[in-house]
Image (cartoon, rainbow, N blue to C red; front, side):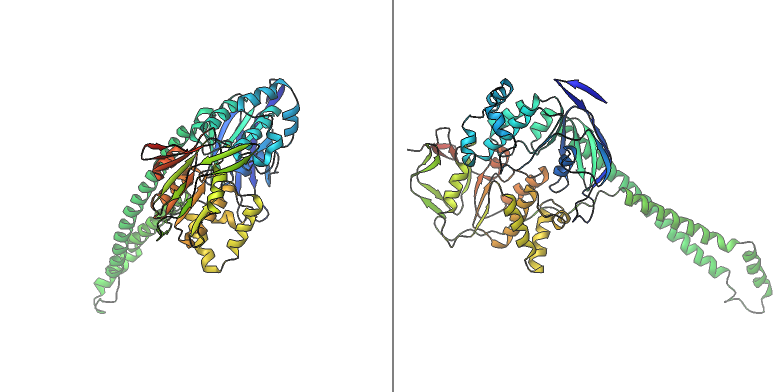
Length: 511
């Protein structure tokens, strides 16, 4: 089915019994999916490594299904990664047409971005990626975590830009507000299966929770019936054994022919078989309930939650820097007064995209004392570095490797996805770095946008883990809920490139 919209033909996207496996896959990443997607945005959610990005690549025609077929595939896929400029970005900047100019104004993209791509923040790169995709106006747009790296203003601009798109939109995101604002439906991917539910993510999660409660109710009812039948079966077993004893000639006087005759007549009429038949019937019913119970299994829920062993450093301060200025490129600078991180510090570093937060983090990590134990997770981990980390984990001895994988699982991802992957997803590689960091017992944890790329469950698990550590924290994030739970002071970089500090509600202005 097709119809015309703004000058291009839009098809309904149809997955017809689609399965997909990578060459190294033990099990299919996606299996037996039959779904249809109309124009408008559909949100896609699931644990890291569940196959969300694979689903987008299939829809955009970048991958071919292993079995089944996809009708209406093809379009633009916008990756989570922002390592490289998007294709045709020079045409976008220099076309001079009104559509490109409208998008540049809408997303606050400056004309000098092409000349300074290497110095752009990942948030600025993400806006360019989105602008180019919307300018091409494809019939299908597959967006993978479009609000990663973006400050609150950037998220607002992206939401406005995506709202104007009228084709078939597929949106992988952990941004609940965006999914609720844009999406008519949400697709939940779990263990290779996909369930489409109407409405935004909040409504979809509520429906998923209701389904889980109903499933649990059915399981409880089945178990109750199993217990009742087991008790009844046991009673009938005892009755059968008693019946067998009653009809046995073993304890009858050989000369008592009347008693033997009665027992033999009972056997001939089959009365001694009744209890046995009833018992066998009961066992059959119990066996059938076992099968029903297996069919209502909750999908093999893994144990989740992780404690990170840390140590409070035995030094007066972990880091000190006198007041200074850091160049940011193109006559831009970051100015700050003296910076101090104490053993008990829990600091949030905030500011708009491009303000210099990641640059300041690099400045701090380069000046830490060598004896300090650090766990650092950067904002973005390049594909080559991700492959290197995975190789290093698998090169560990069996015991260490097993413990890392177990901790990775406790952060909400299936270890099987690592074992069959040459390149972990950005969310998986973050979890792997954290799982490996368990062995370092850090006194300082620095994380740059740690909730980027993580699924909703994993963000909650990370909050719980960091909330219990004894070490100092320095967290860069645009997630206000995340920061409010874990930090008690702020370093704030303003739009003029000046770092101010906020302690206990009181500002300490730079200079």
